[in-house]
Length: 79
Image (tube, rainbow, N blue to C red):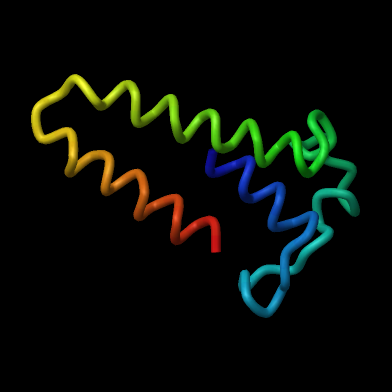
């Protein structure tokens, strides 16, 4: 998920907001999740992976703590 979001930020992000130059993947000729699935497809795939991660932790003790952690990490990264 982290790398998909990184690809999305590089494609449609704001350099000032992200703290990194955008458009570097294309400039460097990198094949990314955005190339593979398109912007909308990458967003869908990213959400699928987040949902799957939550499903995997749903059977462990203190699951809410892990679910909250997943939400926090990806909410912050998805800004």
